[in-house]
Length: 76
Image 1 (cartoon, helix red, strand yellow):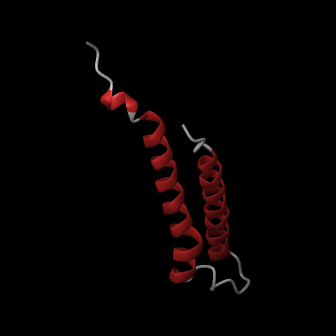
Image 2 (image 1 turned 90 degrees about the vertical axis):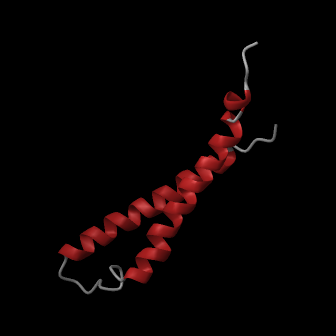
């Protein structure tokens, strides 16, 4: 079996990036400096929602790859 667990590290990195962007976007709403670009819906889509969606999909794929034998296993 190929070592696909390494994709989980990529998934963790993408979640970490989206988490940091989310924290910055929430704090940008409360600051007085000009950070309106960070709360723009397109910026949030590209740097928060897309990496988060890719990370979850990637982790789900890897988990399905490693644990799919549980569905096909039969006790005879």
